[in-house]
Length: 281
Image 1: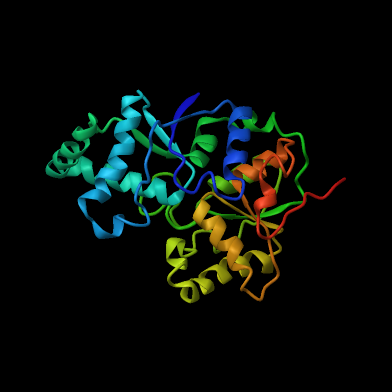
Image 2 (image 1 turned 45 degrees about the horizontal axis):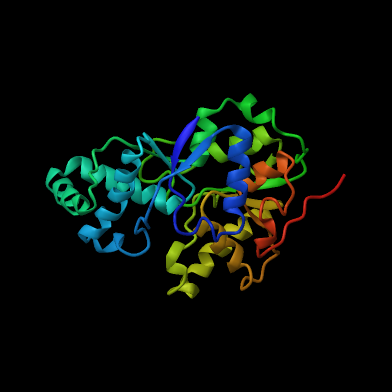
């Protein structure tokens, strides 16, 4: 199966997301074809301004995908996913805005024709593959790893068409398929981590991350698993300032990679701030 892939700006520099996603996608046969000459989607800068640039940036990504005859754009970042979906929805309802955006894109010989579907890689794995397609690659028993599935706040809201927007279970189901334990009553699973606001408003965002971490730790989780680079960095790094027991924050692709037999090094897990080590035996 082939998918257009928009990595996003933090993908390559994150704590093993690139390494683990590439490893997992190769094993599963979900070929991620990188969009040529992609740009930042503008999620943390232009979008709040509602300037025309806020729509040109994501529209350019979608137009580039169409140019490569890619019908689906898959990404691994909640902010990117939400930004592309918001732009796609707005442009589908505002012909004047679409015309203005395409005038800007025409300077590069591009045109956005509203032909692409925006997807998150988690949803691709859960919805496009059968459980047995995943289970057959599991070679390591991870049943003793109790996982707190952390989705963040932007994947399911405001859409509500992927999963329950307030209590999603996609990642929960994937963890179960992999053989891990799942913290089913993890109430902070869709809480906001502060995203990019954690930089200018660190003191205000720390309590958000404290809730995410304390809920997992107090209920017996060994790891938090997330699906977004900003979520991973915030929850992981915030623990340096929180007076709580530390808990590793793994990408869902790293958890998959562990179950598939990849080493921590192959999955880039040495980049985690709170370290993780798979118990032997």
